[in-house]
Image (cartoon, rainbow, N blue to C red; front, side):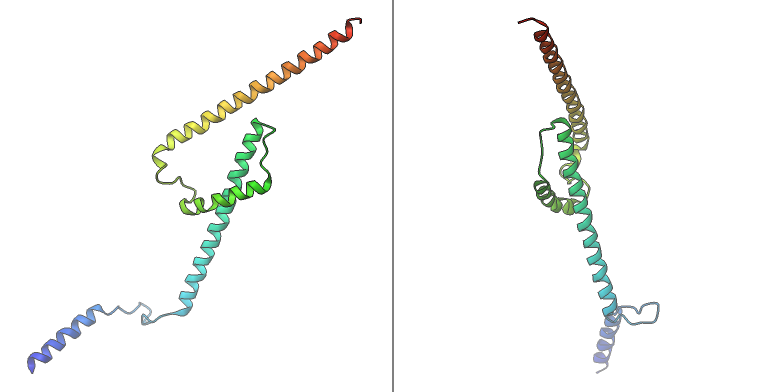
Length: 153
């Protein structure tokens, strides 16, 4: 019988070791519904902020892209409803990766930056060349018009 008491005492000691210590304020580790509710509210607020940030980033990114293209090609126009559709499609990607590049693209950041800057330089050069060409053509047409007016018929 002494052995049984000894075994039970050892089991109780092991159980006491598994017991969570009391918090510093003397409170037991009981469930606190207010704390749980506050955590849920905080999580909901963070989710809403992420949604708003993703929406703003997507809208800005699509508007910037469309505006940049329109700068080089004035006839290019993406209707507002299509821009909105594109932004909605982009939002889950932004939520998934944040404002960072996806992990599979991160090794190529230098190449992407170069490509972006190179495209911008080529775009400006192309746009400038087209503008100069249009101006020269308009100037030639104006000169041809003046020559035909000065030649008697």
